[in-house]
Image 1: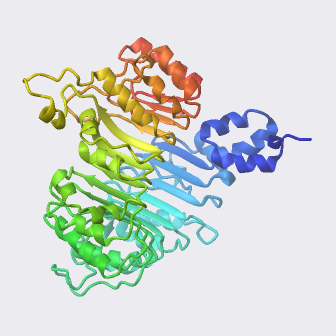
Image 2 (image 1 turned 90 degrees about the vertical axis):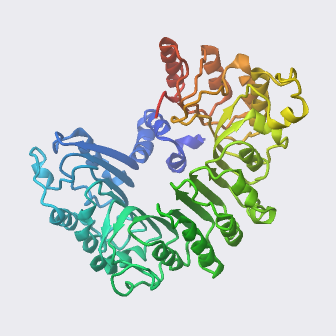
Image 3 (image 1 turned 30 degrees about the vertical axis):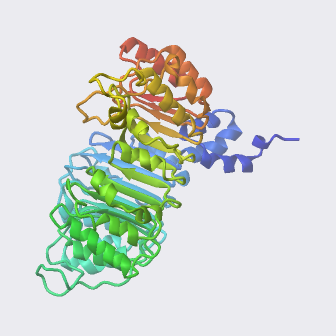
Length: 533
């Protein structure tokens, strides 16, 4: 009777769940396994092209040979002619990342010569010449125009011919009023649309309330977009609100708020938009603003959370909002999202972070700035997020007691004798982490721009690492910019007690020779070990 893995159909079903390293190992087992797993190894392919590369480049030859197996093709260009890869008939997803400072397009027969760019017309000619065949099977298109965003002015008539696009990401593009009809015709039929640093001319506006000049609003109609990222330049926030209103099926909104003083007003307008019934399916909300006091008014973001449907994903990136903001969130406003919130990203520290961990039972991904041992003591409640799979948080071991201890025990101007030592604090934090048995990614990396150097968790067996033996599903451990002094016994314990571990980020030791030995141990066990990103 044949074993299960001897049946090709079963191996084909297993392949999509394996990482590239595992696929490569499986392809080396036998010829039969190679025939099954090698094509799946090429499903997500990457190719970097330098100005000195020629058509007989080995990487390009391998791409051509395995093109029937390629589903995702990522091409990164650095100062040189673009490759005519768009005509691959079996490529369904395509990523073309154009150089950030030079945009040179030509036939690849001229790859051995320095091309002479001809501006916008060169881009349009290239895209027309290499449009996908078979009616346009490319479904995902990402283009970064770098510093040459003006080159998109002749791009829209070309891209609109690609009728099967479901995802379109344009970075550093440019939209003029005469381009709008073609842009909107394409964008309105795409389910996932990302616009990053796209420049809109002043005469482009969607709302009749737009205070600028330029004539009547451009033509718009309802869009099929389900995921929308707006990070635009020159488009008034009222026009962006109008854009959101035109997406009745919107499920995810990623909105980088304006850089000027209108940030608060934009949030208030979005709240009013949701009150009027727009975006009833919105469950993923990502707001980002570089302004220090973007949500300074108590009635902005709290009111928006009160209006929105119960969210599954909430990301408030940018600057720290602070305790006054969180105190403005009434219990009813915040608790309506408790049961559904699965992913939360905030730029917060202290007791705010501790309260979140103690209040969100459905949380699976959590990213915050910092949590100290004193904050845990100030709010002595158990963590409810037992299903947490990804935790990004910098833990701080304190050398002084929290405020509550100052009030009760700090009387003589000295540190209370019963305040836990650094080792005791680490043990108690390890006890908390050990309860997160579903954890897959643990990232305690300190922010690289932090100037202070507080003590943090030390992943050594002699200092309590054994308490984390219950994290059997841990696949990634990150401690970037922290000072670790691991020994061989510590790495051996990790490899034996964390069977799923396949990625480590951060310096394992301050001793260079020991760092090399530990990295060798990780690599021999199949774990990718990096000291920096």
